[in-house]
Amino acid sequence: MLGQLFVRECRQTAKSLIYWLIVLILIFDFTTQLGEMEIDEEPQPGQESYGYRQSEDPDIIMRSTLGQLTEEYVRENYTTYPIGFYKNVTLNEKDDARIGQILEETAGIAGRESAEQVREEWYAAQNGQDSADNMENMMYQEPLKVKPADGLTYEHFTELMDEADKILGGGSNYGKEYREKNAQVPMTYEDAVKEYGALIEEDRLTGGYARLFCDYMVIFLGILPVFLAVTRGLRDRRSMMQELIYTRKCSSLTVMVSRYLAMLVMLTLPVLILSLNPLLKCMSYAGKAGITVDMLAFVKYTFGWLLPTVMAVTALGMFLTELTDTAAAVLVQGAWWFIAVFGGVDRLKGGMYGWNLMPRHNTELNWQGFHGGFAQLAANRLFYMAAALLLVALTVFIYSQKRKGRLHIRGKILANRKSKS
Image (cartoon, rainbow, N blue to C red):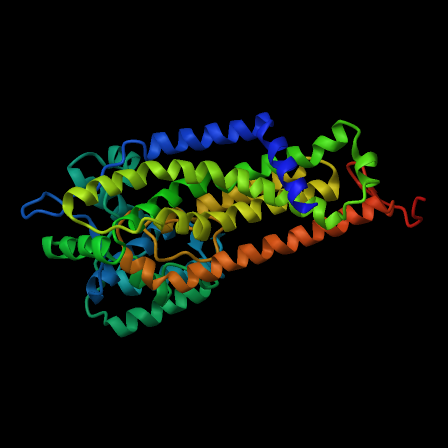
């Protein structure tokens, strides 16, 4: 019975206009972001730039961290990830004054006006333009670096940054974990060769590009499945078929699970098909360069990286739609998606995945960062899979109660404890 319902649900999904709109959006996302993807060539001596790498130099860590503190002190709001989720912090007058004192003690910058002047001078010096012109293009320039105050030791610096992190509630750029990862310096030729070697040897080429593929696809997969789930949940009500379906012999578990599995399969299928394009490009390059690739990399990353997000979003859509008989899930997921996208901006290069619904890794390189953050990423993906299964179980329960006439919802919850016979 489950197999028959699953096939029927897949056919119904294939007839849905919403489903094909989702497929078209995924195709558009892929073609605009990765359609012209080119495989990285081995670095050559004398290139103008080799990218950036994480630095372990205390002086660079201090300059980068103080630059970030200056930026956020001027803006009067701070980005934190207290438990892995994005949070914007605005301080009260007392704590704001203490942050100002810490900045003065560590960088010799007294007051917000002085901090703003330091920032404008930095961006003005990047390419010799007026500071106003530079401020419009800040996102394309090297992040602000601030020289530490004379006589500041690294030990005292870490103490004050730990205090700043505590004031902000933890998870800020000034805690030990983040301040060391955010210090970036230009890579040398030797660094670039090492990074390229990790792509070829550790990732077997396809692993790095599979992560990049997932990075772009997860953005839209963090919102689109909810539309399919809501549409499917409301279809029976619109066609006045709910009462007829409630009387069928199939168990509530069979009905809901078959519907859920069908949506997961139909949403995953176009992603796997799209992944064939970058896979073939990697194979073509590997054949010419004599490189052995991982043929299943895109499949493994699709199921390991993308599927938990699809599961969570689809399950949330099913649960809220069955609970409220409305499209409220679209609003809820839309808000969650916006927070998740905004919260992942500072973690694009990978290695700091946290508990974001949409973990980011916007580069085919940085295998070391991926390897170092793999435990956190695995915990993240398992958490969302477990949360999805819990929501599906709750959806089955609600659906079963409706079939027994104990719960009727028409935009609001109404109690009806007498079962219909």
